[in-house]
Length: 100
Image (cartoon, rainbow, N blue to C red; front, side, top):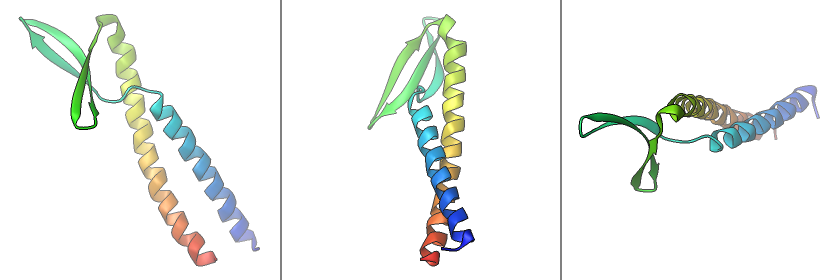
């Protein structure tokens, strides 16, 4: 096997490991968005997410908002990175098929 093939194989394994790690990290964080609702003239914060075809909501206590906001944003960052890694993996798949 050529040196280039070995390098491609190692990089492909690294890519798969990174993708798995990011997917696990994203899964450990809350999904959805934080929405503000006005109820009886008062503002309340809710975490909203999709569960199949349904939209679910959960009230967020005021002291939880900063941490939850940071976690939701971190999940979005992981999801963007996962999308990029999956696209890169598709390109690798095409290259590896040509090598075989």
